[in-house]
Amino acid sequence: MENWISLSKVKWDKQAENWHQRSKSMWKNGSRSKIIPFFMKHVSIGSTIVDLGCGDGYGTYLLRSQGYVATGMDFSDEMIMIAKSQEGEGLSYLTGDLMNLPLKKGGISCGINSQLIRVDS
Image (cartoon, rainbow, N blue to C red; front, side, top):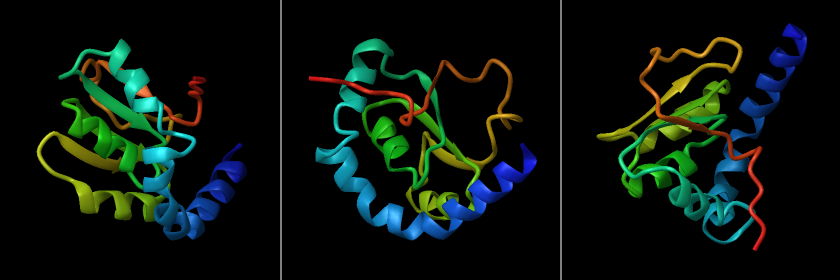
């Protein structure tokens, strides 16, 4: 398992800039465009959210812009470097993995992983 994690991290570090160039269009009018509206129907505004596997952090940024306190987490150092350029009040990013979440117990209302959500029309 450790080898798979290491290989995946290297892969995403190498793809970070390419992913970032496409990210906004995926969230605005592509495959991820329905995720934030769906999320808003089910999670109260103002909740503290962790975006697990946030990539370049644009989805986390959108959550914050809708009134959530948002933390994005990814295991790719390169993705987190890109994401941190968006940090501000109520919005932060950190490097971590799902096997050892670097989060305070009880500090999160809800987690999201956009890789696992599919919203059909």
